[in-house]
Image (cartoon, rainbow, N blue to C red; front, side):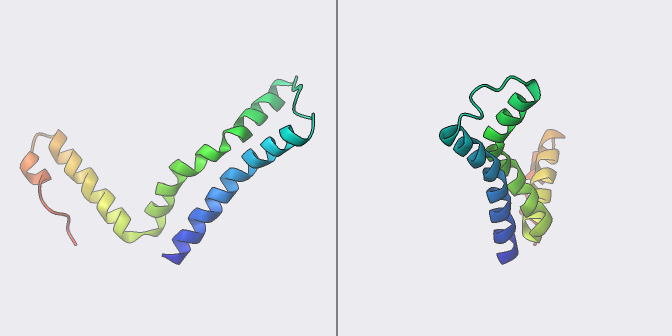
Length: 97
């Protein structure tokens, strides 16, 4: 569990770093005020929105590092599959432990 905590924390910090640097540069210097090159503007826009990346990455970390999370996800997918296939009685079974 400690490994997962450190990996999630590192991903969060790495995702926030470009955002914080871009905002800090914009607040303290005038370097980013007149972005003319399209590539520079795109890079700035990606950096400003990079903090959003940690949200979809966290479930992937849990999926890779936590066995019980994988088991519960597998159970949820099977339950959903059974419901969509028209067999709701098999979807109501409890998860295997």
